Image (cartoon, rainbow, N blue to C red; front, top):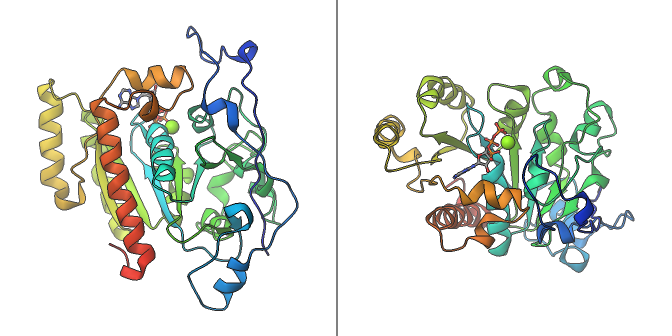
Length: 324
Ligand SMILES: Nc1ncnc2c1ncn2[C@@H]1O[C@H](COP(=O)(O)OP(=O)(O)OP(=O)(O)O)[C@@H](O)[C@H]1O
Ligand SMILES: [Mg+2]
């Protein structure tokens, strides 16, 4: 059964703009245009074509992605073993950068703290979201909770209705089954922001993922905790790439840690290290897209390199080249 993501216009409201303690926020470009779709279901020709066995599909009405029984979109889980690794930041930035590269993009929050929405300009935690469907066997409860950013990214928050700890009791493929209902155009991407691994949230995202992007911040904690995740992903047979984040090349410890990780991970470690840049949290505080507001910085360059690699990976996969 086809179900559909929605959008909703969120007006920028200066009176509600003090979302982060101690930080003066301005009305944000991203906050100005998150939209909710008309709830009326629209079955696209795409779903029928796909069910007939043809994986090329026409766009939905107005070129919008719809939800149907199958998806050719690449699902990418953004995970890490430590908090503050940059998962939410990279999920939001990569989603926007892929949308700018003409991919259909859906960003999904799989973290009950609901931080990802702030990266798209939300001021408050939405009550409904993916978590709303934890207790709903009909699997449709999250269909109307989709939002759209002004740069074209569809976003589904987690929401605040889910019972704490309930995700640990769900079958392993609960999220994968939800995402099977999403029908993006070929070359589409579903990006999953997660809570730190190990957790039910990260595990659900990994289970659903075609590609697991593991962020490895240049911190000793990464070295202490990564091996367990590497082994778990290998046991699950996942396609994995590792990205060094929050790198400060002037710090010898960071350089040593990245060299050690490269030796440990080999070619699975991507050459796109995301550098530490104080403009990243500043952009978040202003509810701006970092890559858009600081386009000439080293870190924006890093993120664009990573997005271009990811775009090529998605295209290769969508073109029938198998998992690159
Ligand atoms: N490359 C960077 N340079 C500087 N600050 C960064 C960078 N990446 C992320 N940050 C900042 O670090 C903080 C944590 O980032 P983020 O929320 O993206 O990480 P996370 O892995 O999702 O963390 P959490 O465990 O809290 O979910 C945020 O304030 C963010 O703005
Ligand atoms: Mg996060």
